[in-house]
Length: 125
Image (cartoon, rainbow, N blue to C red):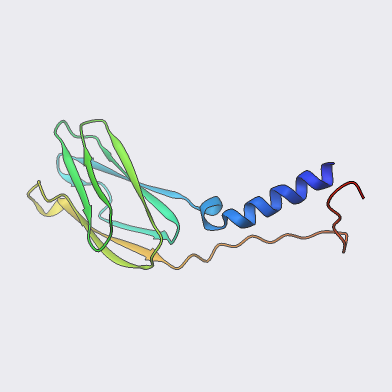
């Protein structure tokens, strides 16, 4: 039974692939703009924007479906699956601090499974 659970967990991890290995980068939005104006993630990762200002802010990432509207104290995220370089901005704010660059690199993380047995038996065997 223990072996079967281990194999099932390994299969679930492999089936989930990049989602199981995905990570989240965080960007604060202040009254002066984005805390990080240059963000790099791997495909399958998410970026979370948190509004730490006292007014509403928006986040728009060009050439993606990522469009966020954040009230003070709110946060939300978008997942990026396509590698490339994208611009993110707050179209409602003025100033140079309200734009940045998002680089999505090809996912290079991997999962390796090793076993001391050459045969895996599923079931009552």
